Length: 296
Ligand code: GRG
Image (cartoon, rainbow, N blue to C red):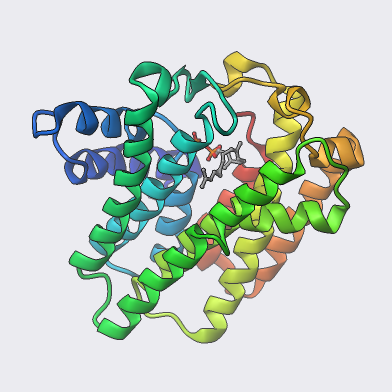
């Protein structure tokens, strides 16, 4: 019997939680406090959107789920590290994440810094010690892809642009450039890595990359709308932070209605990109729906 999207997503989310539990250092292993804090930052929280995108892309190309587990975990560990560092006093200085105290509040700043460092290196350790592809060169390309998406020409670079933009009026292309790097790069990487765990043609990868670019940007536009329109309890993180921090967003630049309509346009473009793949791309299309319609 065909499983609906909610059932498919819930099954992957609970299965993936166990995968993460097994891959993270165990809490009783020394140094215990660091390992406990790493598990605190990663486990029992988050929508797991990036892993779900990797699983959907992997299923599309018939990839071995054990391999996709590792690719998805590497991306989620990088994502979790970025949230821990982003919440620290030297960046966004926030106290609530995923409905619980942020890592530096629950532990301390030095531990939070080391949690981010250790999650990032664990991601690359996993990608390099587990087999993700029958072709060793292809696997090296996958490691390079995640490094590029995470570093100064990807997510970390986007974060640097974000920090520099506080109190400044950015143009729409400047805002887009910031978010393509800060949020979009890792979302794109999740999709491409999931697909590269199987057999995928260059043409299919190009389609997936364009799909990822559209949903990555849509994700951020919706994030800006939710920061403006939703409450802290629903989001599990402090609402209204962008305005409080005088940050340029799609809402401040376009207004909330135009931002919503931009998210819908990006969604339409994403779905159109995969149109020729029909039912094989169903889960990816459903994830695009989820990203645009989400309430948290
Ligand atoms: C510190 C190098 C470095 C980068 C930080 C991702 C990021 C860059 C900052 C997070 C701040 C933020 C609100 C970014 C915009 C969108 C985003 C990535 C939201 C959080 O992702 P979700 O909604 O989070 O997927 P969950 O908790 O569901 O995993």
